[in-house]
Figure (tube, rainbow, N blue to C red):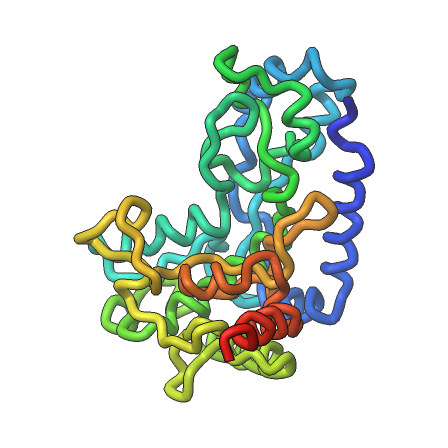
Amino acid sequence: MDIYGEEYQRCQEFSRQFEESEIGQHYREHFCLKEAARPISEKIIEEAYSNIQPHIVNTIEEVKSKVKRRLCVLPKGHMGRCSCFPRMFISSLLTKKIDKKTETSIMNTSGADDYVFKNRCSRLFPIALTNEQERMIRQPQGQKLKCAIPLKEQTTPFMMATALIDWTVYTTNVNGINEHINPHSYEVVTYGDKLNEHKKYLQEYFLSHNRPIFNDMGNTMCPVKHRTLEINNLTDPERDIRLNPYPHDIQMGHISSRTNDCYTIHGTNLVMMTREGNRIIGEYSLIENDWIESLRSLIAQFD
């Protein structure tokens, strides 16, 4: 099979359209977006390729040509070093867990069993398969190939950077987060008022769809439940959120759901939602009214 066939090409075309769109141009005008990290190591790529090679027509050279670096998310024209992951907080167990949540939400794929899809891998990994392609080579209880990521969880460096910028705005506006922000950190000083400017952009964008994402005090809230998000919804040092989840824990909510036809990790397509809000939305789009009409139909049965 050709791992860079029609589905992959559709995703790439979508990414091109996003970069050239009015939204994409907003990020280009305001943020650095220069290459700012080492690429995935050749050894990791070669190991994955050797495991999947019997099943694909693509050469190792073609796969390596798809390897891309993460981009800087600091303001355009900034002084000093670039940064592809802003460090905004006073170091503590809590803030380390916040940064880890950002990393696992934006930069890495979700957990997998390693039979085909790698567990917690970079979304920029150059070998990505559709669910159908994964089933074709999957051998349960056989060799763990650890050779690919789901195409529906892949993204591009530009899209990842724009998603990370949005997520940084959401995180730094969670109620109570201010006492954990380090005002002297390089990233905080370098951003200046740029994140507040981008917050206004996001606020206006979602309000244009009648979906407020910040409350009257400017704090991040779930756009479904309209519940203000607190630090212990984001992470809790006393509780493993994965094993003991609460209804109002923060999850990454997609506007357009994950699909093999286009990349969905990008700016303006992600918001913070509570688990309960995310469950209500399901596969519907937040900015369309289908989920609201579905709820109205459900409620009407009990009137």
